[in-house]
Length: 327
Image (cartoon, rainbow, N blue to C red; front, side, top):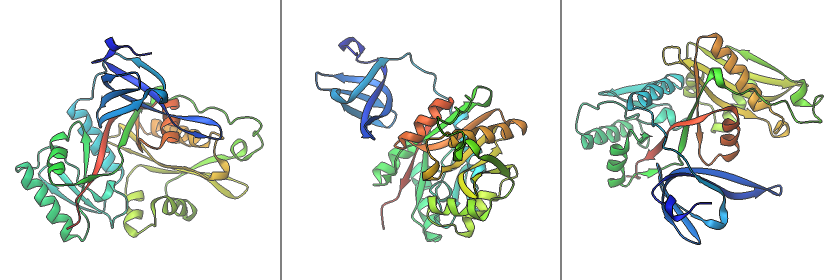
């Protein structure tokens, strides 16, 4: 357990955030321990201060400082991710990207402030607000952290809100851990008997799953999903039913396998299908020359974060999607 001499050091805390089916649900937080009392501990994370009751702490320990990715590494990965999720309407503000896709997903309908906007920061935010107003959309900005901290400060001053924190996680494909076999007694069940097919175009059933998850499927969505040179759609069927889906892209000059829309039908969950889909897409990406995989997941999606951790993914950086106040 932590002691007062740990104050000021980098720690990781695993805390209990709920109970499901009689089992505790955990969430991890990493940051600098700034306060420790008999009842609470407070850590300064990249997203702000987090105060945790001691009663909720399952495990906490000091960890050695880790090396943060360089600014250029964050920019490289953000541009590869943009290439993997291409908005059909695009413009530039210096190096910054402006993106619109009929409101389908925050990633495709937000500015990406990486590089130099070729003007003072307040003028750049003014230009973003005008561009989105001209397109009839609320202005949004994705702020990769810690790279875009100055941008975030300017947005704070203007009263912009923030959506839940998103983790950008990566793993070298050579060290991606194998998918675990489905738990017994399911060798004859859906997961055990299902084959994974990778196709160059999504089936209508695959698109229906994406529409259900993302709230509709406008033409812009079909563009985002398919307008990538190297793309595969994973589909898992058993007894004629679509049990799981996933999407893989290779971008970033061929280095990055991007994983998205990993989805498992409720009746087929907890049988290892998501991990098998990721493994199949990873094998395809490796054959195409990719060396690393990335994905984006909300920090609050505890089950998905836990799965990705088991496969070897770690957080490269984070981002917040910022939303302009109503006018």
